[in-house]
Amino acid sequence: MEFVDLIMAGSFISSLYFFNKKEKKYLIPGLLSLSILLSTKTLSLISGILTLPFLFFKKEGKTPKSIYFLIIYLLFFGLFSYWRNLILTGNPFYPAEISTGNFVIFKGAYIYPKIPIFQRLKTLSHILSFPFSHIDPPVNNRILFLLFFIISLISSFKEKRLFILFLILPLAVFLYSFLVPVHYFQIRHFLPLYSIISISLIYPFRRKEYFCISVYLYICISVFPSIMLARFLIIFLLLSIFLFIPSYFKKTILYLIVLFFFLFILIFEIGKTETIYPILKFEIWKTFYKEEGNLWEFVQKNSINGKNIAYIGSFLIYPLYGEKLNNNVFYQSVNSIDSFPVYKYKKKIKFPEENPENLYRENPSFHLWLKGLKDKKIDWIVVKKNGYIEEKWIEENPSIFKQIYSFQNFLIYEISKEFQCVK
Image (cartoon, rainbow, N blue to C red; front, side):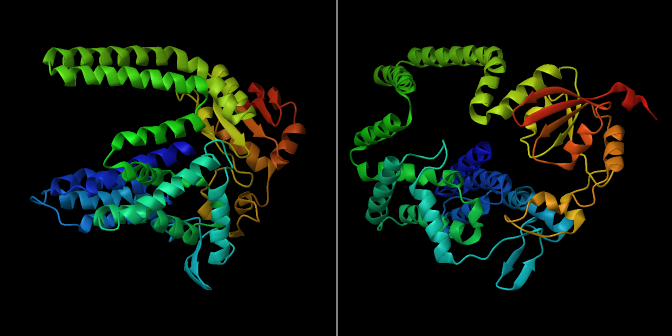
């Protein structure tokens, strides 16, 4: 989901900021930021590696004593998921199988098709040229970003640090096209690089910075609805006034007034959020996730006392845990009473041609599946219809499974109390 990409973008920006400082004391927050970056998702390895050149610039001051502890922290916590995968599966990048040519470096569950680099670059350039989702920037902004980036890259050639910073963008794009399977290509994976694009929008105006305001206004006008843009400009104007007045008159009392004003607004907004968001979140979910948002609303409103929920199909399962995380959510295997991790099945598929569910759904057994539901004391079964064998089993046993929710492709069944009580 996009939230992980935002975390990756934020930690990338902070890593670059601290590593680019000239004092050694900033290595501590830099390494902490890099740890967060590397721990978000596998794609962050590309961004993380490209921040390292800034570590080798000359830095002033004493090396912090805690630097060695932080390096250990980075290696352990930042790379925790890779160590875990290596210990459990023998492959730090599981489920992907890593190979070069016909030589397999790390065995995995997903075998990706081998696509020439020129075809990869062609596919990626197409994705970067046109919007494919609601979070992709419009074409006019992409042209603007590219134009300013080229100007900034060329004009920063004599400034070593900035030139290397701008070089991160094309290097990241090339490494992404070379290392990431083609069917994963999405423009949101480049959110960390937006920080470099933002710098390139300012750099040509470094001697007359106020000119860059017109560029940002153009971007805002082309992206935000008029009402939202008007609200943003009003807030921006008020903030500018409140910050300008104290700095102009240089009165301590004015700084205190502004501080208390912002604290008041913050407390007011937090209180308002606690009462409004629980109501509005369902409308937000239904806007972006359509019928699945309706399902989440039913689950959260009707499981206040806590439920044990099993799901069938591909879900974003987090909302199923309930508003206060009072539900337990399970996947019940169709071929065993207990559900095992995928790597235990020792299978491989050609991805994305084959369904990943083929890895763990062979030899289904109704009796094993039913026994697993009973042992886990399942109350509800949430179904996303797609011709699963469990759908057939449920339809054949109406005395056990009672439908309590139906909306388009989503169903919820309640398991009868009589079945749960049978020993």
